[in-house]
Image 1: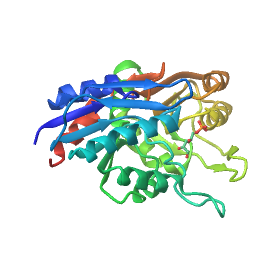
Image 2 (image 1 turned 90 degrees about the vertical axis):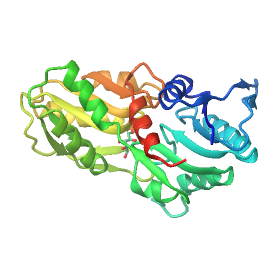
Image 3 (image 1 turned 180 degrees about the horizontal axis):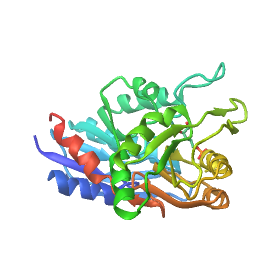
Image 4 (image 1 turned 90 degrees about the horizontal axis):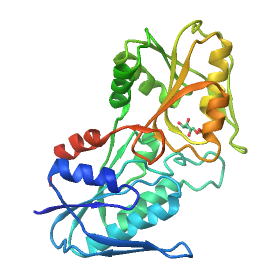
Length: 295
Ligand code: R5P
């Protein structure tokens, strides 16, 4: 079956790189956003009876990027193509359970929308949780950007036995893997989020970071609040230089100022989203996985 790749409006560059690496033909399309915010896509290439990989990340403005992904996927499946979605940053994956009674499990709704437009499988990078993945009624693969981030840090900075810090239990495993790759050690902080206000509190504890360089690792940096609070505690415990690494540098609003004011010396993210801090290229991370999938 012929292989096409749709490099969606949110991921044109990344999509084109993936297409080149896997030898897929790019789908030609026109795209516009009307003044009222509605998106319109016109597919020019005939994709009848082929495999189409739809690459579209869903960083802010999130909902319009999801709609574009749904529109394109629906068109392809209606025209007899088998659709694989590559969504480098999968929005709504933090809304993976009913934390308070009555809360919508939003990622579950997204999962059903994906299925209803004909998506048959999903590849994403460092999906927030296993609970989020479990909501999908078709195969979901979460590939890890951690080795790529660690390699970048190792090649570009000379941190001596750095301490790799996970700001909460959710990122513990990622910190352990990262630490191994940069010849450091890892610790996990105890974070609690107020379920009503969303405010984050990190427990103060005695940490052995005096005079050490510290790398905070997380899947997402959004408002910067989590990393800033972790940095404060680490500096109070005598840390030397604190840097922040993440897979998805969403960095909304004043996040950069929040991080700089907290003394974060560097922000290193990947190109799952488009930002000034999307330094590490994860094309190969996705390509290597796509190569393992059957047609
Ligand atoms: C939460 O569990 C995530 O792993 C991140 O720690 C969180 O989403 C970061 O958000 P923010 O930068 O707004 O604190």
